[in-house]
Amino acid sequence: MPIARRSKLKRRLPAMLVTGIGGMVAAAVSFATAVYEAANPAPVELVKKDEPIDTGRWLVTINNASMAAVPPTGTKPVDAKRFLTVDLELDNRSAATSNAFMRLISIEMLPSIKLPEPVYYLARDKWIASAINPGMPEKVIAVWEWPEGSPSPKALRFSVAKQIYKPRDNLYGAPGWFEDGKAAIVEMAVSGQPDEAVQ
Amino acid sequence: MMAVLRSILLLGLGALVLFVMQHNTPGYGDITSPIAIRGKAGERVEGHAFAYGAANVHLARVVKTESFGRVRDYSSSGVWLIIEGAAVAKKESLTLLSAEWLSPGGIRYALSQRFSTMRGGYLPTERLEPGLPKPVLIAFELPETAIKGGRLLIARSALTPLGEELWIDLDQKAQLEIKPSITLARGSGSMPWTLAAK
Amino acid sequence: MSQRRLFWTCLLALVAVLPLAIVVHAWDSLRQMPVFTGKHDIVVEGGAVQPYAGGQWKLADLKRLPGPSDEARIVLAEFETEPRDLAMLAQSACRVRLVDAEGRRFEPLMLSEPIVREMYPEVADRPRCSSLAFANAGNGGTVRMVESFIVPAKASDLSLVVEVQGGEVGVLVFKWKRS
Image (cartoon, rainbow over all chains, first blue to last red):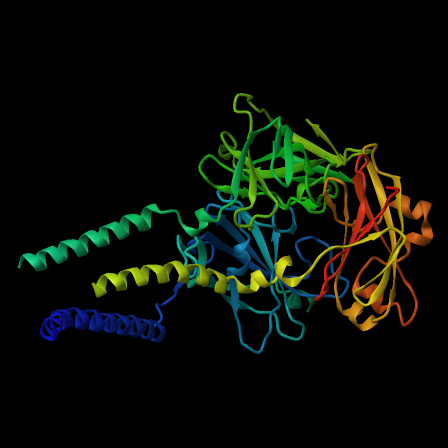
């Protein structure tokens, strides 16, 4: 009986070793890739204005950026304010209506300047934009209220985020869209300087 | 030699079975999706908690809303689909927050939020009381190709797993004419809106 | 022989362990079931006073007013509480519903209908049931509250359900004969 048991263990030993070592190697490779990718991020593409950017879920085109004293609604605020208005074209390529474009574009700025969240206007209505339908590209105006005291920008860098579709997410196995780094960076001049016009 | 070959074969078979199961078993999204209750436009479709009936369906290029003498034009790169109907709660007071248009290609279009300033009768703003049917208005902005063969989905909320959802097919035979414009104005009495097509 | 016994032991253990695992997983939800919490409805006849959630509660009146259409009626529920433990009341959320003979539940209206203000202006100004109403009450006085509902004209045997959430024994059900 003891001999039989020992021989059984002996036969199983290679299998146990293979699975153990294999598992450890797999974990080490996955960890090393993660560390490597964090240390060497893929270079982000630099895109010119008026060129469509594929962000996975959206096709985004940044057409124009300008400073204005009036928001797109046309009603002048009581206190004089400066608005950075950015003209966009958005095409929803997913299978459902979505307002996720509102988190897509950010301005790369000096950390000392705190920008408020932008407000999105539908160019068609000159009114606050709601979600955008698939297959119905829309022109949208993103408006940042420019903080008082900081000079109007001459040029800006816009960073456009990317989203990928997972048919099964890692937690529940539910389908969904997930953040996936940057799609592109757009550098462009800002036109219509109200400061200069006043002077 | 035979034993090694057999174990490799078994391993391959196992991988194949797992692969087939991964791609053929319903995902989390399918398992927890709302339960469909099918019906047709023109009839009252009964859910457990609420019922809805679609009465009139209109298509238009432009929707005009009129309130307090001010007219606003809502243009679209597609077509406006406006559905007049009535809804009622059955067991408790509720609001039907989710209405979607499912195109024949499987794309889901959400209810238009563009006339959020319009009060009265718009489905997600109406509190429904048990036993008291209320006229409700639904508006979608759709590409022209998404209309034929599509269906209207109505639920209490878009996110409730295993909730009930009415799936309403519109009459496929009736050829709907696309009107140049439809004007929605405040109604009086029991109808919260008036609709005039041009 | 011993292997066979092991097999059966394991199979039996599985039969016991599987339901046990479900019970452990759902323990918190199970504990909140009415059977385990001892919560039950406290049924009170209209006009009677009932101690509940740190106060003496009473349904003063349940009026039916004409509704926006022929099929609908507005129900105006006037109720009051004499707080004994104001701190406790001011902390807990108050939920009010109207239930009819068929068990249909009506939530109160957010804004009172114009007809209420027209017919009973002094009632319309009372607060709705909320912790705010208790917080503003001050010590000693009776807190008079009002809630309005829209119900079908045919709805009968209406009763007002008051629930003060926060570790209480159950809900208060005021029966009203004349409705």
